[in-house]
Image 1 (cartoon, protein in one colour):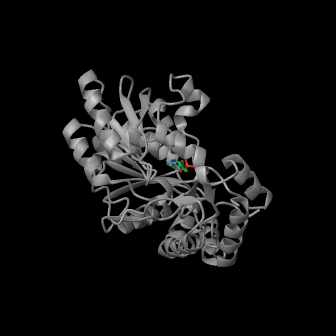
Image 2: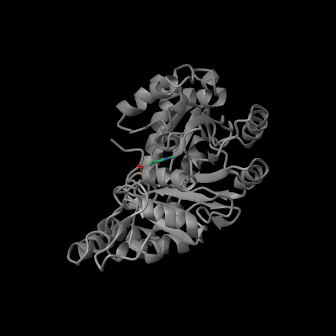
Image 3: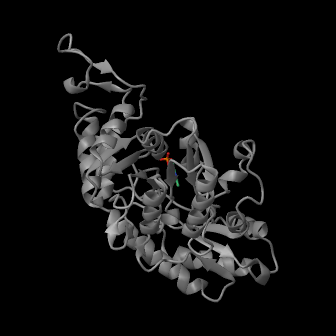
Amino acid sequence: MIPYGRQSISEDDVRAVVEVLRSDFLTQGPVIPAFERAVAEYCGAWHSVAVNSATSALHLACLALDVGPGDYVWTSPITFVASANCALYCGASVDFVDIDPATYNLSVECLAEKLHQAELRGCLPKVVIPVHLCGLSCDMEPIYRLSKQYGFKIIEDASHAIGGKYRGEAVGNCRYSDITVFSFHPVKIITTGEGGMALTNDAQLAKRMALLRSHGITREHEDMTHEADGPWYYQQIALGFNYRMTDMQAALGLSQLNRLDMFVNRRHELAEIYKLHLTGLPVNWQLQAHDCRSSLHLFVIRLQLSLIGTSHLEVFRQLRSASIGVNLHYIPVHLQPFYQNKGFQQGDYPEAEKYYAEAITLPIYPDLLDAQVLQIVEVLRGCLQ
Ligand SMILES: *Cc1c(COP(=O)(O)O)cnc(C)c1O
């Protein structure tokens, strides 16, 4: 089976991890801050906090922004469940903004309209979480302007998008957001096995997230309520978690970061081959906004169902039975039973639901061969005839 995505591991990556295994620190050592600095520098952000997953980073980001009971957090229905769950962890409520049918990202027009309505009803969101689907940045500048008009904070869920650009600058620089979150799961652009990172230009937010990453415990004297009892002393000043990344993971991430641009370039080569050979078939793909460079984490096609004599399900099944590990990113979050139990239902977000009825994720990852792309397109061509 050709998977839809997978990691690319070099001998340098292996050596970097082994070096840590032979060193003094497997966790809480020097490689973690080195990885944090390298990612922050790559993205042009001031601060970064490495954690054990993007899910943890989203949770810490919400906590740092004081999301709690009575608050609303808005995100896109076409995302992984973690983008919404983070609000529920904090006791807040979730709501969704429908997607743009061409970019598959949260629609800025729908957001503006929903904000207008929410203001009238007195239930504006505390935080909006735009998700850069497939690695394509949302149109952040107008979202940022809306955040100033209506007074909400922004967490970019850039789990797909490290290595991508928006208006010529790296995703993650937080020019138009309070916090940006990356995932380093093996299917993502670079990997640490499991892992994630939160970036911000706000020193207070970074400090808060770093505190909550490690039990809410501080060893900084200025943060303590009184003088230390002795050199062993630490204080718990908040209810935190163990969301730490290990040094093995950070070493893998640091080594992978050297190949980030190469990975993204290779993904673009593969996408160009797909587009060249898919042209003329009854499928659409994500509009690449001219002011963005996607990291191309996913290559999603949408079937033009009115032009084909078969169903979405049948095309998907045939691709799988031809050993092509297609997938579907994502089932609209509001249609998950857990969210339907909160009152969401079919029909709430028509564009997201239409997308779900048509979308198929084709394989894309740096080690995929040109010939495999051609093979995938030929199988797909057969399915669509
Ligand atoms: C993968 C992913 C996450 C969660 O990442 P983990 O590192 O696996 O916790 C969150 N949001 C989106 C959009 C993702 O794709």
